[in-house]
Length: 123
Image (cartoon, rainbow, N blue to C red; front, side, top):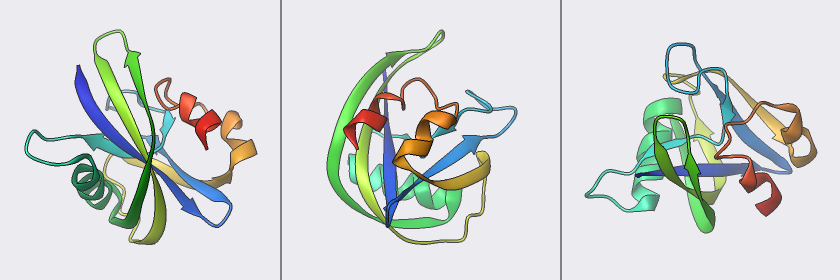
């Protein structure tokens, strides 16, 4: 099992989601962005690092929202979500090809990665 952390990033009443680009795992799926936790780092540090690397984004990491264990066809992940306040971003996309700020009600209109879907009911 791989431990992965993601940010449920707020700005006012909207949430940040990003679409995974063609050529990488789960291409075309929308997600709450984040990434793998390295052995030597905390969940919060991993989230800050991944958001900066993938989006040029800075956030304030708040409380843990929840955890989901999900079996994809080739891998099992434990996805850990944190509520985050948006601070700033360059939006330099490395693993994504699009991003959006959406209201909670709009999240069901996007093809979210399966592991991310349970977090909709937690926010």
